[in-house]
Image (tube, rainbow, N blue to C red):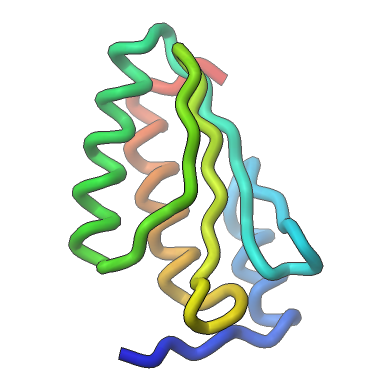
Length: 102
């Protein structure tokens, strides 16, 4: 399925609606760092996020060190940001809101 890259203005508007996410590479991707109480909570977040990503068929670039999960999202085959990136970011925020410590 071809995914349509967003224009910069539309992506900027969607980014403004998300808390704590920043743009990278001239609005080609979005990034956020999630912190949790401990490794167990961080890993539980990653499991929930992975399930959501699988349902969307859209997968983040991420890294976990102890209680921190760093996330970078972009639609590689579209060459930038698409609606899927913002859907996944919103889902991640929703999962983190139950356990995030900062």
